[in-house]
Every structure is written in structure tokens, then in C-alpha cells.
Amino acid sequence: MAIPRHFHPADFGFDPKEIGNSSGFFYKQATIEWSSPRIWNPDELAPTGLENLEPGYLYAIVRNHHRAKTRDTIVYVGITNNLDRRFRNHPKASNFAAMRGPTSLSIGTVDFGFYRTAKTTGNRKALEGIEHVLIWSLWPTLFNEKKQHSLPRFKAPVAQAWHIENTGYRFAGRMPREIVFPWMLIKHGRDRSAK
Image 1 (cartoon, rainbow, N blue to C red):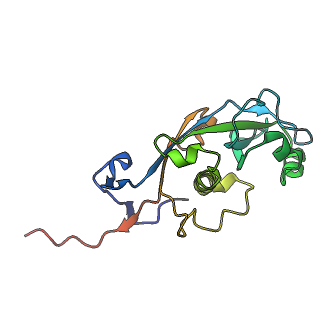
Image 2 (cartoon, rainbow, N blue to C red; image 1 turned 30 degrees about the horizontal axis):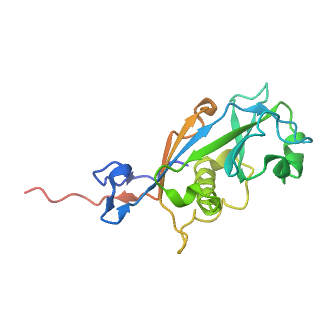
Image 3 (cartoon, rainbow, N blue to C red; image 1 turned 45 degrees about the horizontal axis):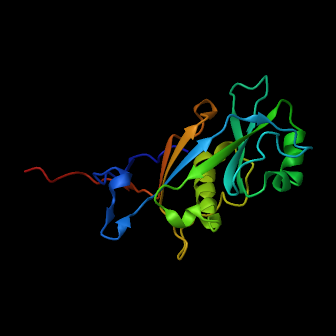
């Protein structure tokens, strides 16, 4: 989606990492390291070699069709604590199985930095917030349905502001390097301030 005409991102004069007050920084920092995608047959369990992951991570399902004009199309973003259980009955598995070309799976492990509460086993809400922001930033190619029509974690008491950095595998440039949510778009009026 393009930025609406005449709208511009607001300039707060600071890097998102520096915006805050005496209580702390406004934006929670999260760095996601994406693994190189491994081939996944949607009729089977998750790809081998991913068994020793700690609970709580993101995943991206990637499609590559040999006749497609683009590569590394991200078609689904999700979270799980158990890959095997998740992919035994994935809601979109039949859709992916019916498509031509390989389907791959990339795992995103999240480093929450100083956001200590998200490092514990109670990090589900934090992961859901990040998943929702990713869905909004990638939505044109996604098969996700549930979180495309609601604002990411914008309702109290679970409202979250995120500065997300994506590292590791680049998905042919499709995954944004950084995401700041929420930010602000503004439309300037005519500037008559000059004397």
C-alpha cells in the first residue's frame, strides 16, 4: 500500500530507540533473526533440523514457483511454541499443498533486548503483537485472515509500541529491515509562516 497523496511520516526529531521519558523508552525493541527457509511438505510435519528451538518463535511460510516472476513470496506469518504440533494440522496446509513449486519454512527467533517480561514463558502477548505488525506490513501476499482487519494490539491494556528489526535471511528483500509501530502520517497545510 502506498502512502496516501500529500501525507508524510511525522518527524519526531529522534531515532525510535531514543524516544521516551523518565519512565523508559516508548518503543519496545525486538530483533528477529530469520533462518534460511527449509523445504516443507504441507502433508508432513515441520522440516527436520528445527527440533532444538526454545519455545516461542515466529515462522514465515515461503513459496517459490519456477514460473513466478518474483521469488521468496511470503504467504503466511505465524507464531508457535511447538512446530510439530502446529504443522500437524495447519489451517492453510491444503492450500499450500495444492500449489505448484516448493513450500519452505523460515523460523524467526526473537531477541527482546531489555524488555524482560517478554523473555519469560509469558511472552505470548508480545509475540502476538509482533506477529500482527508483521502481517500488516506484509499483507498483500499473505493467506493470513484473522489479523488483517484489526489494528495491531492497539487496545488497552495490551497496547504495544514496537521497533522491530529483521535480521538473518532477507526473503529476496521482501521482509522489511525495520518496522516502527505505531508512527504517524501527517498532511501539512499551506505554510504561511514566513514573514
